Image 1: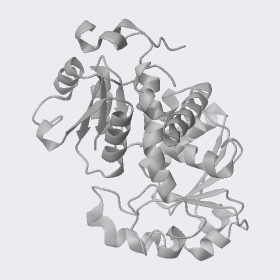
Image 2: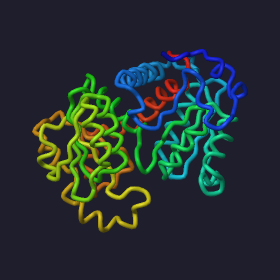
Image 3: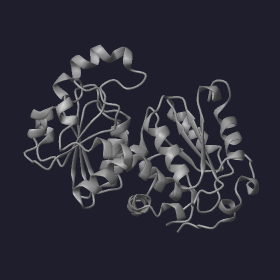
Image 4: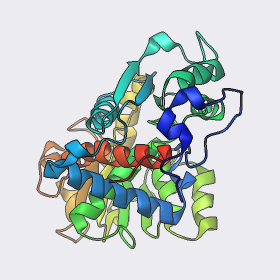
Length: 336
């Protein structure tokens, strides 16, 4: 169990030693992959997110300030809307101050990642990074003695998937266990984190994608070996979505791939999530999700985005609530 009142948390960075590979104080941890958590810890974080969200929505959140006098350093090498706003707003609502660092940090370029890590850890209580390179994220965590949270890399996006699971559970009114989630499009970093979740939670995950755009083979094997959830790759999107509880879309060309946009559009056109594909589930209750930003008219239609089945803006707001829970969990901060 977490030690909620550890000396490191109560007294902040000044009590910490800063030798390389020092590790985190007892009761604290990093969050780099969804499957860094155990099955019970995934449930713990989701339930914590629901509790903190309810507190904030009730108006009683002013009394819950677990991050009072704490700072969160946010490092961005990729542009962001939801990641920056959700972390900054969330940390402030929980009593703390977040500072936004952009390209001026030059992580891995102007300055070695391990040096940036130790500098940030010496003056902050938490670090969140949104980076291109997953290797940089791993090095940032390796040399930090405060919790590091992965706000996205080219490999995965764990905070997004915790927010997605939270959204699905809210809309369905029950745990995600046993649900069929179908992602339609490129087997990208979003898919990789869904696979990480399937290593820990018993649900069915299907990735419908064209040849050459499959998700990480190692993670597919990890799901099979874990034998908790299931994962499959299907080429026919209509066959893939049959009976789906959730259909999930993302842009066909992510950041760093925009030069491939035209070629990708030709390949992915049959994978557009439109009204016909939504109807192919055979269920009126199917939920539509999209991690945003959406390119309406490409991976999905305006009609689907604005439909009653679409919960993309609840999903976007839930980034803040899910990440509030993640921050409290990894910091070993007091619970509500």
